[in-house]
Image 1 (cartoon, one colour):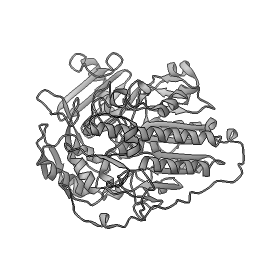
Image 2 (tube, helix red, strand yellow; image 1 turned 45 degrees about the vertical axis):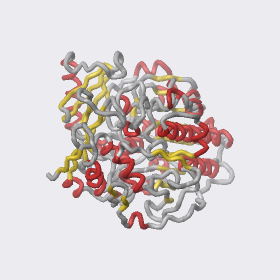
Image 3 (cartoon, rainbow, N blue to C red; image 1 turned 135 degrees about the horizontal axis):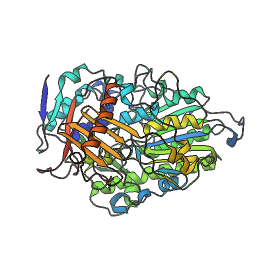
Image 4 (tube, rainbow, N blue to C red; image 1 turned 90 degrees about the vertical axis):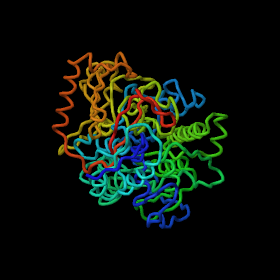
Length: 559
């Protein structure tokens, strides 16, 4: 097996979050090597003729099945919102609209993403199934990406253990557009569409673009797809950029990305968004709400914010005040835009008389990223996106449905992204598919039946995996094992929620009990659809702008 060793830290695996943005590109030290991808013409902005429901409703909004709005942020840290008492820059930035959504419904105080990176989490939201069943275990990357980054990274002075690039695995992977959720999987959108819902996806997809895997082929009537990853053109007069000179992936991104999207066409027929991406998708979401006010709809608003590259509008940058360093101020401004989006969507539902009978769910695909070089984004938890410490997988999950869910609830039952699909099907009184196993559970009893339902909740176990990294939470105990380094981390989360005291040596009984659960889960798992091509070490307690020193803990994660 051909391997190239490069002394890179977390950022190589971070590349997984960007792999879908520039298929076939090989970009070295800021020089763009021209490919068909970059030569494609991006048309000017244009109006989207969103499909419209009936001019007159067949029934009152309160008597129809509930509308559903699923809002997913990208790389949002647990401490980036003020709901839990925090906020960006030590609380200098508050998120009042997200906070209001939380106050008006149920807050799950121990909620988890499906994965520590984006695409597998999104697949679990759509299917309610673990990667052990779907095979969709890694975030898609184009074959050239790992190779190009490893060459750039080899020149960087990093002190973490080296990163592996597997050229054979890269060569044997499907093309980027075919690295997706298999079309035979049944998505939430397909099931709601079959029940009479108009289904709309806006934003990030990252679950494939061809062969029946694009959003508009996986149950969405309409899909406004993020075809690349700039929030605005780099030289736009109203943009403020923050480039990260300590992050080779960031240099790669600024060379590679374009400002474009597409409508119901995958990568084809690209055109420019009509504004800053977070605001533009919000504008279009409001148009969808207004166009479908008289029929049940499912809107999946999959934001790119606050994922890198760090770009904010000048207005938001000025509004957040004199926050330092510069990248933190831009990050805060991006978070302000995300919060504003939530508020505008909620206001549109109110204005159209739909708020009472609309289910709104807000979550993030994983925890905040260490490669942005900012402390405390996941406070008080350890770890970052890509790791499976609590900072990498603890995410907000807020559910508002005034018709059925009382406001002001805080529910401490552990839940995860696999639970979203079965919960929403139960809300619209539809059964789960009978031809496949669904791993998630219906959360409605927890939100509508109070303490009694929480006491009677029977599920005790949640699983995560990424190659040799295997993780289980069983009751209040959590075990994480890895081969590189060869180590086990065992924590009692009831007594140690921030994972400071590793009990693997002190509690061999619990270690054995949870290891048995991991082994049983692995024995019943299907192989990944394709093998990872890169594996990089991640410092658990330090972000990327800080030096790694002897004695610092790390874990190696493949993708």
